[in-house]
Amino acid sequence: MLGRVASAILLVVAALALFVSAGGLGSSTGSAATLETAAFRSHAVNSRLHFLIALPEGYATSGLRYPVVYFLHGLPASPTSYQTLAWVSGALEQTGHEAILVVPQAASSTASDPEYHDWGPGKNWETALASELTRYVDAHYRTIANRSGRAIVGFSAGGYGATILGIHHPMKYSVIESWSGYFRPTDPTGERTLDVGSKADNDDASVPSLVAGLRKQFRRYPTFLGFYVGKRDPTFVNDNVRLDSELIAARVSHVFELYAGAHTKTLWQSHAVVWLKLALDRLQAPTA
Image (tube, rainbow, N blue to C red):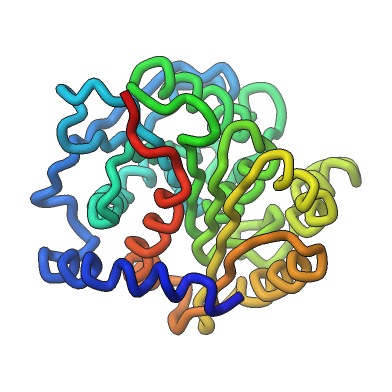
């Protein structure tokens, strides 16, 4: 699987070089996209749920509907951690695609590590993000409001969130990407697997437990699944290598890359343009 993104990497080398020379991924300065903050009342988490949204250049007058990339942050986190991901907007622009970027809040002052899971009334983060958020965004922005226009992507715990939400909601997303993620709910160290309830609940929260059904699911709902990890990641290399092997054995189409690097923002920024382009290449283009 390690060579399957090579052609895509070559296609974006020029764009990546231009991006770095323009100031890198750490700032949205000079970005043509309109970056806003928004919020709505979430019943699932019993509070207002905030998010960043980046609208492509020309959105106000184009009249077009756009694909949407939902991007999930790492955990544990504060209620405002999502605000630190404005750099993703700049990376998305460098792909050459026009799309809407949504970066939601995924933690609260009372739940710093909810693991993108539904824990019960007022604590249902999966429902808030996969159902309420997509419904709100589709109602208030000009989106391609079906799975052909939605990708879900994340890094670290957000990689787990993107993968499990994407698999749980195949009618919502046609692209799933995990950057340095893991594939089971964990404690804040990332090392201990959390017990989320019954055996059925634990199996449903574990990507490896769901692999056997993915070939059939992906035939019914064609899905791009991609993930990567740094070779020096202190915690999640084994999770990624193991999932790659299990998907190969189950004949589930996917892309996996093992990169030089650790569990750092530097790694995610250096590959952001390539991997966002991989996602956007597979989404429906803006349409009238």
